[in-house]
Image (cartoon, rainbow, N blue to C red; front, side):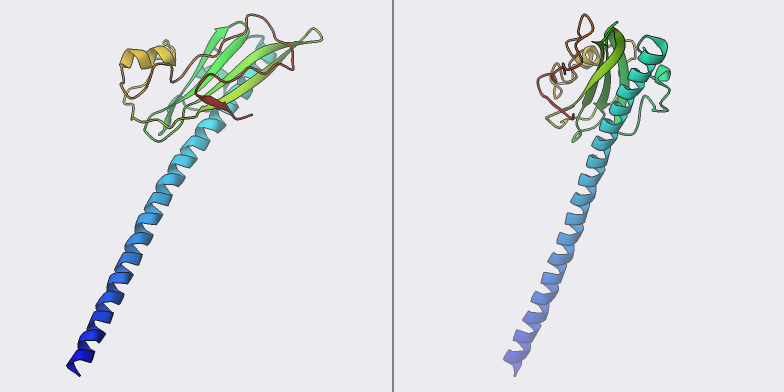
Length: 194
């Protein structure tokens, strides 16, 4: 009879241990899933905001005849800084403007957009490209880039070892309006969202 009690006690202990492991697994799994969702939502924010900035630049060019040189000129209501990203717009020349979302912490992706002029039957038009970095960021950034400095030059001036040179590359800006069927490719290390 004493043997049966020991076996029964072991079974209860084993069952409690299994329940503990199951509870711990559910807790860790939900924590990882929550972290994934938070990063996924932040990445979606960057893609959406840069897409909105691209469309605002298109509208600004058609309305005013020039690209907006600053975030305020876009009139989108997008702040230059959010919890996860810094946003910047930079006129490359009279024919192109680049919009950027620079990730502030590890595990996110940088997003860049380009809007350029097209020539279609002697009328002013635009086209765009939206790209995201194919690699996740590996380090947190603690200071904001100056609006007077390109994001690429800012990264180089910070000498952040984990962020390689060119993490936010500049597009090769066209020197004249392009035909409407031409879509500029994303820079190396970036993939298109179009």
